[in-house]
Length: 44
Image (cartoon, rainbow, N blue to C red; front, side, top):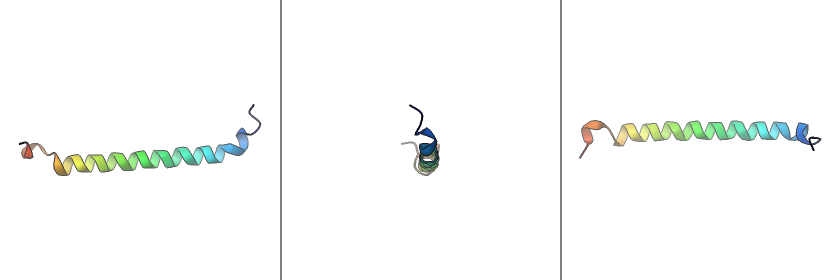
């Protein structure tokens, strides 16, 4: 069952890293958007 796991580990690890990077990127963008467009003094 786990024979192929060793070969797949680098790909799995890279996929996880890429996903983590994408999530962090989206988080930064969303925080920036909130700061830009939803500042308290602009409440209408």
